Length: 159
Image 1 (cartoon, rainbow, N blue to C red):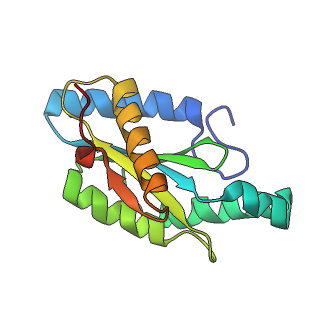
Image 2 (image 1 turned 30 degrees about the vertical axis):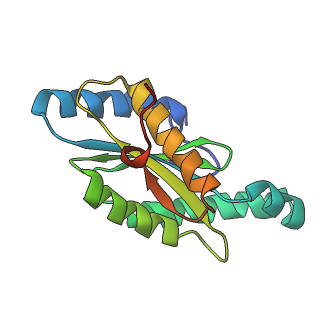
């Protein structure tokens, strides 16, 4: 239970940190691509306020099940916190990641939507920086209308 989110049955943050460190090391050693994404349920607070927290918990559980069904064997998904999920896609570059993550987005249960930001590891950045870039892409997805997938590659780099 120390590595499992008790509500969704997904890996929790502690498990993510351990397994993702291994994935990043493997990508570094083998020179393979690795993509990280952050998915956030759109307007989850409003859903909770309208339907109640038990319904919100049911939505999170259904989302976890739906998302897991869209991923490949070897991919990693964890509940990041609240209504956010983090995904690692090993051996996955930008184009393939966009396809997988769009399936994830479309799998949001019921009439709910989600926004996803992702970043492909550049081969040298830290795990923290990679997650920061995925998070920045998530904010672009949210700010550009929600219910979409955005790549950090499309975000201009500040000088």
